[in-house]
Amino acid sequence: MSNTLSPRRRWLAALGLAPLLQACSPIRLINATVPSNTHTVLRGEAYGSAERQRMDVYLPVDKAPDAPMAVFFYGGSWSSGERADYKFVGEALASRGIVTVIADYRLSPEVRYPVFLQDCALAVRWARDNARRLGASPSRLFVSGHSAGAYNAAMLALDARWLTEVAMDPGELAGWAGLAGPYDFLPIGIPEVQLAFNWPDTPASSQPLFHAPSGTGLKHKVLLLAAKSDTAVNPQRNTLALAQALQQRGTPVELALFDRVNHVTLIGAMAPPLRGLAPVLDRFSQFLLQRTT
Image (cartoon, helix red, strand yellow):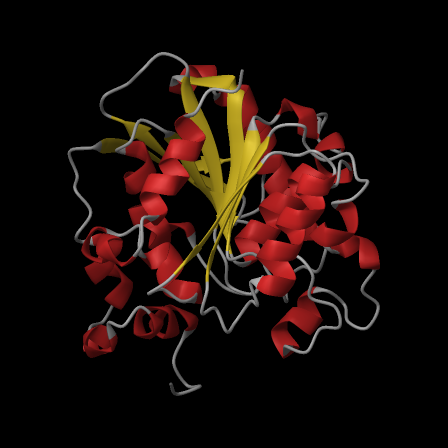
């Protein structure tokens, strides 16, 4: 794949839809497959004053009292991404009865670690404060994400510093879900990630796995999904190692590694044309819909 492709076009090519790259806005072709009768959208909700402190909220058409609410953070090496590209995620979860927040956050090189985590914490605080207005239950609030976004979700759940800064506690979360997340990536070799994390002055405490054995973390449930053939984020070092560390401390973890998908098509499998690749949507939505006893 050519290095001259934009992040958005690289994303589409990795989904196996390279013939569509001639289109002006290729990601729109994926989102064009999303039904419009399963959800409504509140666009551009502000959780802060910065331009990228915005979110889209996907509301189920068939509303249920005290619905679960999932805040979803996308990936992009903390240097690219925008919420509009993940309409297919918002619709997929909303169609299953889950109020879904797709949040932008500030990116490198504008900011460095930990500013993007602070943005994500503010987004979660907004979701908690507005849950009842949106038909969701504050006690059924989840953080989630894919790739770099899964890292963000893990850090909010496992390292109490970030939610404490916004007058929350990780224990207020019902759980969290990580899809193909990088949870242990020191030393850093990727240039854009080096920049985002101020490498080599990157603290060990920046890694989710650092907090898994003894951090404040969650007593509630965790979902970890990954592709067996992920060559971008090694599932053994990241997903499996984190699952083991959490299970050893008594945290309930649901774990699944899928065939037939890679790092990108794992999240792509939530889009209508690609759902046959792996049951990602089924596992994700079932996890969010379960009630914690």
